Image 1 (cartoon, rainbow, N blue to C red):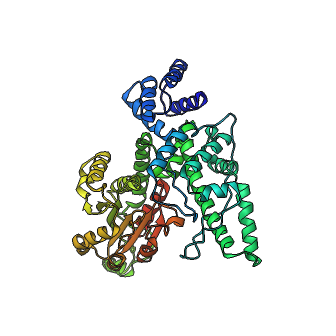
Image 2 (image 1 turned 90 degrees about the vertical axis):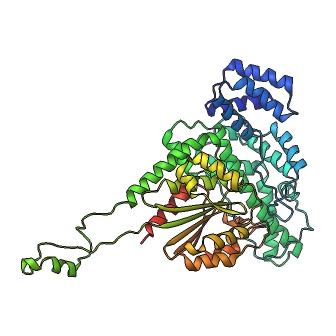
Image 3 (image 1 turned 90 degrees about the horizontal axis):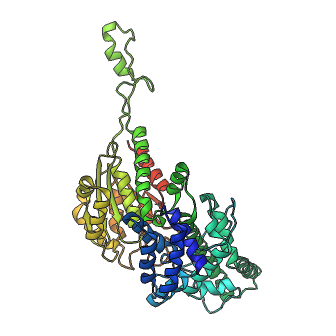
Length: 493
């Protein structure tokens, strides 16, 4: 456990918390006294020893939670798909077991590289897969066992073997993803999938075997996605982000859900910088036009006083209209970070998008335009979460509220942006209302933070919402947000 604590101290120093060798020894003594059975007691005890100021205490809490937890790990069921119901007892057991395993590594450095593998593929059919046949590979058995705890512990042990705590630069994410997958037994799983698929091609495979290949392929792709997220989080714990430019680039690309609270200030500065660049590009309205297409009628009219001699040339001017935007944001827990930065981005573009109306919901829809216009982002987001973020997610209810209160304000100059994962808890999606919004507006843009492979999994309704949108995009990083907003401004007419 001492080696685990040393790695934790290293992560604290990366988080700009000064920890001396003497304080590290004190922390080891503290660990011997309090033990690891009571997580909260251990956290409070180490905080007393290792954090000295309120700012350090806040950073310590975030670092401790990230280092010793896997709450964001999603359970994979026997059919290879994500499950959405997590057993609380299982989650608690996972927390205790992962404390001694997570976020560790040995010595040495990894360099460069990228992750191979195939992207998650959608199911060929909506029919349930036969789950009667069990896999032979160890990783396959682990993936389809449905045990979140065992899978988390296996990933943590593989992270130790792969020395993920030695990650130096963000471009090593692919290398360490591959290393961890290999340490978990990827080769045996790939061989089993290949054998099952070969039997299917030759016509020798039976239905349970064919379905087993599909289940294992889905589970493998979901695991790879979660290992990538795990490596991203390890980078923020262990990497020395000394270069400001490199730090900004990685913050633009990382999933917003993987950001720690201590990164919010840096991300806010990046958002303002990106917004300033877009304003500079799209706010230019030339007073005089000295190039382009000749306006013959205006030129002749203004040169009549010169007996037809063309002294005063006039060119055709294209006036750029400012977009009229309605932004609807899901502020339930899993999507709130994405909504925070989208709204921050839009309100930073007031010079080029002055007509922004914003709405928030988890079930009931409410307008928060004046709140974000008159308050700081953090204060406005906190009040929005308090007022609208505690309900059970209900997109159907949201669309009904929008139709009743806002549909009359939608016209052919309105762009509607919806940010959310489209997970409706199996309720009525009310897709016909979205189709009505599509017909009345200029554009409907749906930004979904989940990968496309998850858009039709479980209670996700993107299969019904997608056809009623002019544009549906994966949007889970600042780079994605910048591209979407830039395209919105480019298409303004």
